[in-house]
Image 1 (tube, rainbow, N blue to C red):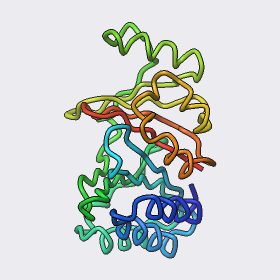
Image 2: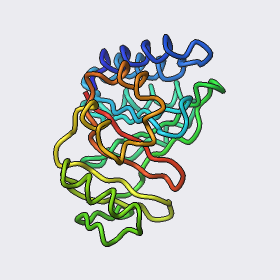
Image 3: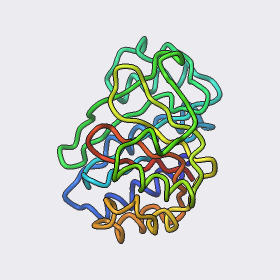
Length: 208
């Protein structure tokens, strides 16, 4: 998503959730739009927590200005963002709690060697997850499965981003069903590029 698309989604999220605060993500997108106009965003939503979202920054262009903007908005030391973005992964993945109105975990992958990627095989998973993933792969090809040292769960990168309405039709999207109407309003023009399982909840990572 470019900055305008990300802003539009956040404005819609705030309208759908009058009790939540989206000031932090809106400020982050605005700051990076000025410092790094070419920046692209991923927005991840959770099937389990309607007040949680994650912003992933796919940076490009001048990084020094982006580092300063990130440090300022997220109240972190600029040295935290010293590394370069990794190909195919978000440079920064920041979790926001709309109910509490604050940032949670802010992940900055620190080394490509920590990321292990391999071809998808349903046999690598236990039932009933294996069958659900196999059926999903037949509808939307899973290009790679990524794991990170020291972190639970996995990331499944799709060979081709799947439009949100089509994703909701998949059995794997059942955890998103209670929020289907709201999420369809927010993500009607978005596509699911990857799925994350963090050990507790399934996240859909969406691009423009």
